[in-house]
Structure formats: structure tokens, C-alpha cells
Image 1 (cartoon, rainbow, N blue to C red):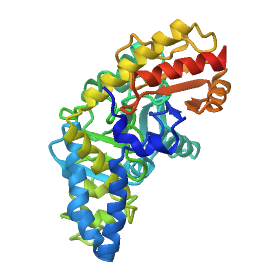
Image 2 (cartoon, rainbow, N blue to C red):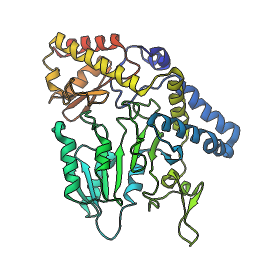
Image 3 (cartoon, rainbow, N blue to C red):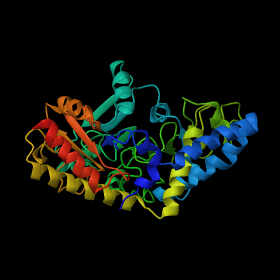
Image 4 (cartoon, one colour):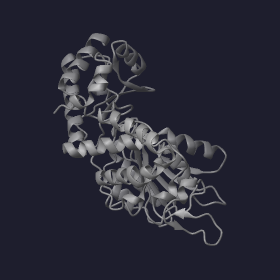
Length: 389
């Protein structure tokens, strides 16, 4: 299966480049160029009235497309924004006041949540319990045990951990184990959305879910969303004026009114171009009849080829023994993480040969996407062997 013909602008821009950081910045398919131009032309044609088209057409169509991918029954429960950090702040602003809220999370969350939580912790504004991600084999059991040992105001957990690529296999069980109906439950799905088949049907009435278009959805920035379950976080203290759009709840007593669905988590004026791109990508894949399961299977097949290639090349600096999540572990995302103190040096050596990988501390991450084929994997293995041995 090859989809390179749908990424012609990307490949023509730099034919020598070999991009294997699909978990970080994903190339955009050609349909996004027309979508971006359509956004500009709508602005030129409609000026101030462009927002009527955005909220009357682009926004609901993108909601419907995301809901279709995730198995959500209520597209209106989705709110869009420019980045996940904004949604993190609004979620935190829903927590009880008068005492430091109690939070349960993992030790492997992305910076948009982890950094903010630590900063609030420094001033005594949050009490955070973190469960170590590794060893992966018993993470779910340890996290569930932490759930029953104490009570929490917020449970925040990634579907796929951004450093190792390990995918939590039983999200529904973990969410179901949260007994206190006042506890907010949030899943960071950024490394799972459009990378792993994700059906939120069993979770949609209980858990928040956030993800976006920058990575596997191939849509770039300014296309992040939050699924907001009804009845939870009804009045975020961190609010934008867009949250007053649509059917309002409250406000008759002089208090601030909010949208009754996902709109209650909206911020303020944003660049809508990301929604145009995200809508185009999701509709394009739907027209091609390419599912997330297809994308995931394609990535895993290429991962297996890559590991086989490394074994054949017998590269000392990079080998399967360094994998944070072994190739035999089915609960993994669409990238592989190699743990090595030489991670930065390896990345630099490959970048000099127009090969893009990604490094975080001692972790070298290799991401596989829809735009890759077996020939790319063979080239990657050859280049690694030439550069490192």
C-alpha cells in the first residue's frame, strides 16, 4: 500500500529528504493546500461574514468528521481550539476551589499538561500523584490501584505515551474504575488519534478526550479538539467569549452563561485555517475508504520491516535491543523509541544525510506514516548502516 501520490507537493519540495518523524510533524497531503487556499478565499469573499460560513459549515462538518472517526454519537460535544494547553487550562479551571485539587496522572504526560501541573504544584495550588509509566506490563494495574487508594478531583492520562509509544490497552476499564461522579476524567489522545483505532462510545458520557491535527491527522497546527462529556465541567473559570455562542445554560441570574454542549470549552478568536485542513484530510481518507485501522496496520508492518532491516545490518549503535516497547508488544503506537545515550549524535549524523528522526533526551523516536512505503524503510536501514558503522 503506497499513498505517495497524494503527497506530491511535499516530496517535490525536497526529493532527497527521508522523513521518519511522523509522530512529531507529519507531512500534509495535497488536499490541504486546496483547503488552505479555500480558507483564504472565503475570507476575501466574505470578510467579516466569513464566521457565518466557519460556524455554519466548516465547524459542524469538522465536528462530524472527527466524531465519525472516534465513534462519538454527539458531534456537538466537540470544541475546537488552537492547542491542547488551552483546553488543559480550562479543565484545571473547573476543579474545586478553596483547597488544592487532587490530581492523579502518569509520569509520562506531555508538557502541555505535565509542565503546567508542576508549576501549579510549586505554589501549592495542586496536589499531584504520578504513577510511573514503566514497567509498561503492569502500568494499568498500578494506575488502577492508585485510583482506589485515594480520591481525586481530576484523573488525567495519555492513551499513547509520547516518549515510549506504549499504548494503554484498557482505557475503558480505567475510566470505569473512577467511582466518584464528581471526578473529572481526561484522556490525552494526541498520539492515538488517527494512529490507532479508537472507539470512544463506551467513554463519551464520562471522559474528556483531547487530540488534534498536528501529528497523525496530517493537518498541521490550529486544529485541536476536546470532547466534553455532558454534565462535567459545566462552567470553566478560564472562559472565552466564544463559549457564549449557541444554546446557553445559566445566566438568567446575572451569572456568566455558557454553551450547553462542547461550546462551553471554547476560547476566543482563532485562526480557522486548521479546521479547513483537518476537514479536508478526514474527508479525503473517508473518500478513499482508508480507516485508522488501515493506517495503524500499515505503520506496524513497516515497523516490523525496519526492525528486520536493522537486524540484518547488525548495526551496533542502533539495534532492536534498545527498544522501549519491543516489536512483539501489540500495545504500541505508530512510532518506535530506541533508548541510547547516543540518541542526539545519531540524529545529527542522519540529519546530515537528509534523514529526519526525533530525539528527546536519550530517546530516539522513529515514526511511520501513511506516506511511507517499504522502499523508504530499506533506504532508512541502508542510511543508518552507512552513517553509524
